[in-house]
Length: 225
Image (cartoon, rainbow, N blue to C red; front, side, top):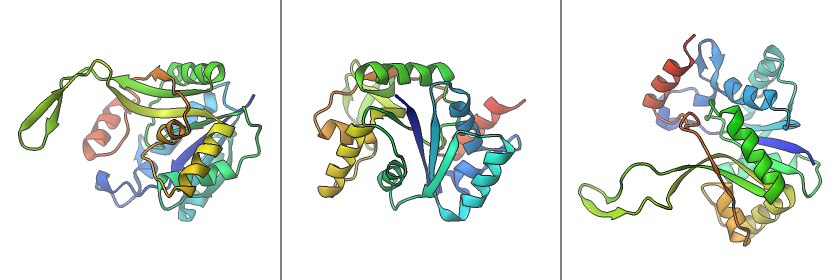
């Protein structure tokens, strides 16, 4: 059984307020996406990494691969119109067996702890899939300008990545979604649509997604030498 990683990196990062997509912004002289890639490079359970990106960044990614010795980065494919399209483009580029594992991870989650990744891979090997999540710890409400109702947080989780699935399940789920013209916000929704139970794995607050300027400020402080 092999483990392949798909990193959809075609997003524009508009909410960050930067003209450069957030995954290519430098922190301490190193592009954000390199921090993400190094996590998978160092993990012994990972065999190959695929990036879906805008073609204009292909040459930069090739330079980063060489500069940082990212030997597990084997393939760079064109990103799609939406995240789901980008993941599928990556999936189509892989020649693997039905029980091989496909790890999907956001390019803009650069601080994924090694133990969280390993734990998720081990759960997916044993049970067929794994969804990294954080259990809600704060009081949760619904409302716009005023509180409409309070939500019981007992069984509520914040979904993160990586999300890990068997190749055959993910391929089936994605093909069904496209046939139904259905777009999800993440891959676990697609797997749920084909009737597969999804296994929750404990995530980490460090594994936050860089989205806004405030997130950039936090990342700068965490990565300062």
